[in-house]
Length: 251
Image (tube, rainbow, N blue to C red):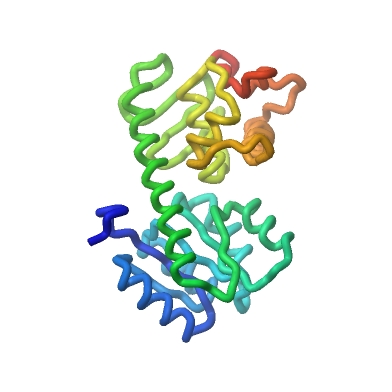
């Protein structure tokens, strides 16, 4: 019996070491997961639409298309979790993976129980994020600018949460899953400043440690993609001592 979740989660494992891949597949299946394996990045991309995984495990060093290239290509359209496997002890590789949109990484040689614990942590976080997104829709669907179809509209800006679509003046804006989640959260609390602590907790499922700049970096990226480059910003406003505020009447 799986006490941590009754959901059968799907994993796509991208690992070029066939022996290790087979071992991991058997281990994950014994622990209640559905697993598909790919030996190359090209194969993983072909499998992704039909596999519909909740989590992708990516080896950093792959022949041909490496893990970072795969992550860069799929992150805008894949809204599950991505975990990197790496034999590299170079901090820059790990930083690059996180900045590319990875949610976590585990260093080789692998300890299966540790890997399993990290996977379950990410999947619990995914479930929490999905539940919170559904709760936000229920709570805010009567707010001005929203409807009951999981859409938010503010002037020229339209957000569609179910497909994580952002449109500005009729143009699709290419946001990562994490950027969309942050924008959606801010928009659901339009005209209310949200602290970094609250933003980190609700989008990443962890407590803010006072040092993590992930939210700030995503705010910078959102402003750039949304053309909010004036100083001070007009759409996503920095409220000193309080956090960030989505200005509903600025779009």
